[in-house]
Length: 225
Ligand code: IYR
Image 1 (tube, rainbow, N blue to C red):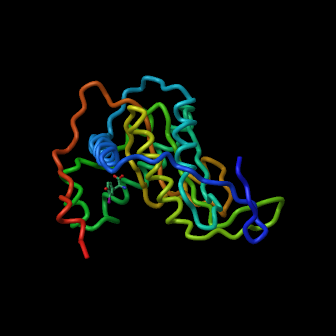
Image 2: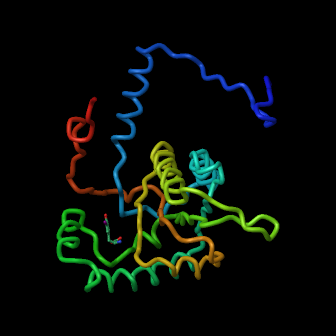
């Protein structure tokens, strides 16, 4: 490996195989077509999935860039039916209160086309739940480690996670029960870790329907200067 010191710090030579502009176009198009097949799915088949797949997905998430490379994330993986049940009961308790009044009428009407409600059977049906925690700061040998851009970093890692789940042929729902501090208790996480996102992962149920919704066009999302 080619190495050199820059300002006294080790650096390694970075190379990326060169591809032609034509190949870039076809590869980027292919990746878009693949990612455009991703849909949020809320109904799961309980069929098991090898743990190694989940490990690979999480390793992919952890390739995300992060503020000062602090990698301020923890991924809890739940397959134990008892723990899933606890999470479902606690989430549904919060969701029921939210749908019964905490959420505005506009919010609820915006969600109507998606068909969501307070019931969350996917929290028990999915073979795995991944709960992503963001670390407000780190802990190394009893000392606090400063973290930066924590939400941005963990958000990017979650994007990688969702893409990796899709690429493995699986489906997920990005669930954000609110408030979700019950996850810290059930999963025994320290107070400097805050629940960020709950992602049930699995195969979709045999006959699954998803809302007939569409993505914004490039013209709507991209501005050229
Ligand atoms: N957390 C609730 C409500 C909800 C909110 C949004 I914004 C969504 O895009 C979907 C659901 C729930 O999980 O039902």
